[in-house]
Length: 213
Image: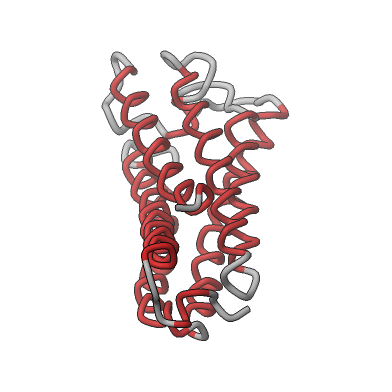
C-alpha cells in the first residue's frame, strides 16, 4: 500500500476534523458561521487546530499529487501538487482576525486572500484536467463523469460563496465549496490504494499495472 496514495485520503480527513473541532471551540459564534481562515486567526480560540489542518492537508496533497503524476498523463496531477503548496501557504500566511473587518490589513492577510482565490480556481481546473486524463485512461474512464460533476459542483458552490463572503451564510457555503473537491480527492486516492493492493494480491488486468502516460 503506497503512502502517497493513502495521503490523499488522510489529508481531507484531518482537515475536515480540524475545522469541525475548531468550529466547536469558538464560544459565542455559530458552529458554521466562522470561515475556515478565521479559525486559524490569532484571535480565534485554539487556532493551532486549524493551522495544523491546513499544513497536514497541504503536505498530504503534495504527496498525493506526486503519486498521480506517476500514474496519469496531463497537467492535472501538477495542479493537485500546486493546490498542496497553496494550502500550506494559506495556513502559514494567516488572516489578521477571526471575523472579517473593515479597514487596512497586514501583508500576510492580503497574501492569504490572493492565495485562497488562486487555490479555489486551481481546485476547479485540476478536477477538469484530471477528468480529461481519466477519459483517455481505460481503468479510469468510468470515473470521468463523476469528476466532471465534482468540478461543476465546486465551481457552483464557489460562485455562491464568493459574493456571500461577508454574509452570515459565508461559512456554510465555504465549507460546501471546500468539501466537494476534498471528497473527490479522497475517492480517487482510495481507488488508487485499491489498485495498488490488487497488484500485490495477485494477477490483475494489464491496465491496472500502469496507467498510460
